Length: 79
Image: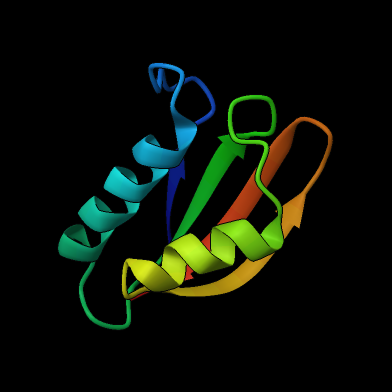
């Protein structure tokens, strides 16, 4: 499984739009059935499980697992 560390990304102050664009890109980058582990900074992306799930689903992907700590949010996403 590939891992994509997005903790140091600069999202221009709009994490919502950045995440939407990132997930849309993942849709085109992943092969059917492929999984990826993505790590986000909790500070830059202060979303909860429900918000991440909603955005992943809107990108026609599937959120397999979500875990969050004070510092990071980790998602396992499948196409």
